[in-house]
Length: 290
Picture 1 (cartoon, rainbow, N blue to C red):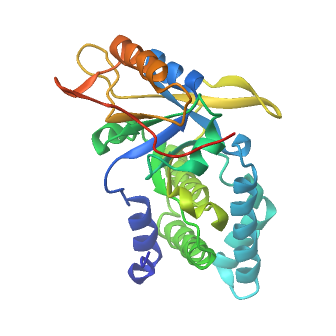
Picture 2: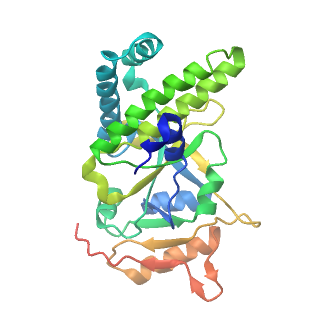
């Protein structure tokens, strides 16, 4: 990821504009799959309540370490900016996450997201993903796993913020608050992209959704209590059917029963075929024993 040749503003902007080649795949359970098709939405879960809560802490720690190292070297307005951020670095990145993988049949994902006989991968193309990104509070980011790349990106982020603050320091009133909102979304996008190197196999992309007081927040029970989430509208056709690229049924002991049920679900709520003769449903070839 050689982006740092473009300066801090160019580097951050180019990073946030990265887009995947091919489909993105969302792993879920049967309950999640039914919810997606019935509601025509996909969940964005609080980053602090993901299956691996260490991810949020991981990004905050990297940010704090970078800011502490910078504070001793800087002077003037940049030093003040860093000092202000050091007061509450763990508050940065309180966003909501929808996870996708570039791999549609990944054994570690079946294990992480669902139990045997209750696992599915729902795939979306670029147009279907772009329909979500029409919301200005949503951004698509590619996860970064290598520590050195994470440090470089955070380095560029601090420089980016300083340059942007210097450039737009004259804004007042509503224009200032609108600009601050954009800066917060940039920070959230970069921080949410930082993941522990042990998860590199996932090749994850994330839709990062900022806190939005105009959007209804929903709640569900989780392993450690109440979990906040948003529902993001998905693309539908002229008949209100959910648009998706393909679906994979995870490892299961009864393929025929699983495919029969999924086929009925798709026909009821989604677009069932790529062409009149080609189904969108396939089976995992992974071998999974719980």
